[in-house]
Amino acid sequence: MKPANILIVLVTGMCLSIIPLGAAMAASAKDNYRTYCAQCHGLQGNGQGINVRDMSVQPRNHTDVVYMSSRSDQDLFTADKKGGLAINKSVLMPPWGDTLNDQEIHAMVQYLRKLCRCQEGKQ
Amino acid sequence: MNHKKTYLKKISGAIAGVGILAIATISPAHADNVSAGMGILQNRCASCHNLTGPPPKTLKALWARKAPDLFYAGNKFQKSWLISWLQKPVRIRPAGEFYAEHIKPGPVHDEVDESTLKPHMALSKADAVQVAAALMTLKGHSDLITKEHMSPGTISKTMGKMVFDKFLGCIACHRISPNYGGLSGPELYTAGSRLQPAFMASYIRSPQAWDPKIWMPNKHVNDARIQQLVHYLESMKGGNPQ
Image (cartoon, rainbow over the protein chains, first blue to last red):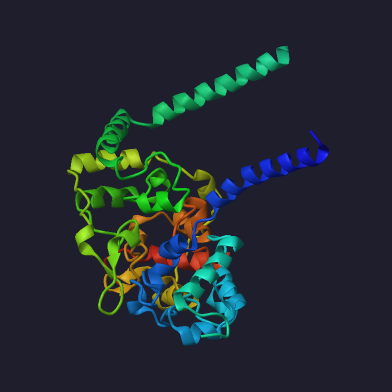
């Protein structure tokens, strides 16, 4: 076998062994949302979770296109990872950095963009 | 070689000594209770409660969990509370376990779907005593408990509530009276009679160390605040809701 072919086999093998492991580690953003975010932001992402009645600051409505398009992806990432205080928002939004890894938080930002059907700066 | 043999002799002697001491300190009646309680746990509780660990490692496993894990019950609960609660169980998690399986969209906000929640079975006093004795022997995560050093102390209700509610936002998910607070976490207005202080401290320090996929975040609460929170929760014994 030519050295180039050996290299291809080795790299392919490494990818096959790494990808399933990574896929198992990172849950989908939709599943993470249902598990961690829905308790306050609601099953439908409308900011109306089961916990909202007595909260002094109401959770963000993630389907609010005007507000959500005004926040940058970086802000959403920071709020998710480090909590509301990190972007001068409420302490009621906790940091999820010990629950979700960076890959999952990036995926969550994209999921939030799906919920609002908006992009940063674009409604 | 001789040195090794002597060392082994000493070790086996020490183990035998500890064993004799353990047998001498555990009364036959207590041992009977533990054994009978284990039988009840295996036959009537294990279909919903995880008695052996490990906790769920994936979201799908977390969603499938029907009731709290009990493999660390002896490090978590107060025995007197267990005996009492098992005879007259009252729901601790307003939205059950796993919460998202028991909620539905409502006219204003999501609501608990009561039709999906079943009451916990009640035990006779004799069974409750036996099950509590057995549960207290389940000591998963003792390594985490030994890391905690709680100082005895108190905190005023006002300050405690301030820390819990305003500084840390725990109120979002936990109730501190039967009709005030969030619903996705266990109620805490009986925490003081239900939970051991070191467990509360350790769980607040890192919920993920106990239950990797749990929906309670790690808020990186510092030691001083953990002490304040636990002193506040210790005062919540159910009789005087705040």
